[in-house]
Length: 344
Image (cartoon, rainbow, N blue to C red; front, side):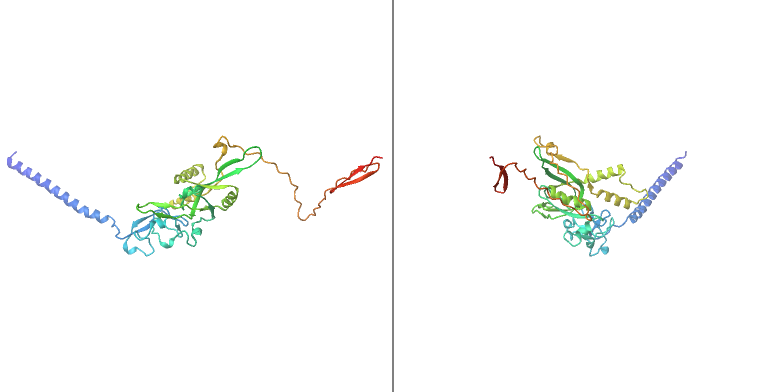
């Protein structure tokens, strides 16, 4: 091949490769602004308090229910909780008065704080009741029970009887009760951020059904009531057990919001009955393990209907002693009179 043709061919290849590289760089530079144009602009404004999940009426605000999120400045309302202006610690334990959807800002009018009018009425679920029980530092988990927690109720009592020492027993009578309020207060300690000092409280208000409220009222007259704090993971395990056993029937056409509402209502259901118990004999060999023998009660006669006349029989008088055949003398000693025969 001619040397001139070879040089021209090499020069043509070099020009083609350079043109391809230049075109590639031009197309890449044009695509970058287009991608940045598609990216959603970040809102420029303060952070407001929004719901991380759906908050129906009666939900007690906890740390995992709300969070601060960037919000456009022109959309911020006076009723919003703005980061830096609102005290998050004071919002924990408040109750949702009006339903808030996920991602929606939480307004000041949608929350009601403990001590405000209508707090318990807003916290109660439909058909539920509120009952307050007295506790001590030991029966109230040392003051570490807060609104929104769930507890079990134990009853300790002493059963007296004949034939040995009394039976001492403790049984779990109620489970999975939601704590609505306590009379405790917390304050920040000086010198360390995020540390709080929990003061002892004397009463705890629980959310119960009418039937459970009656049982708690009777239990307080029988013995001593003790609260046992439940773990957060227990609700998930109880929910899985209820789904596996068929207690919860999720509709096939239910929306995710309806399924979440059904599951949460099931998790919040108090459990009555089926609790365990421990006697003194299970703890100490010197205590009883069985019920002491009870004195049987005498059977009573059935009451007559109100429309029938009841005849009350007087007890028969004691028969008079037989008179002696011969002469006798009546001898009276106090209120007792006796007939003594006299020998001739």
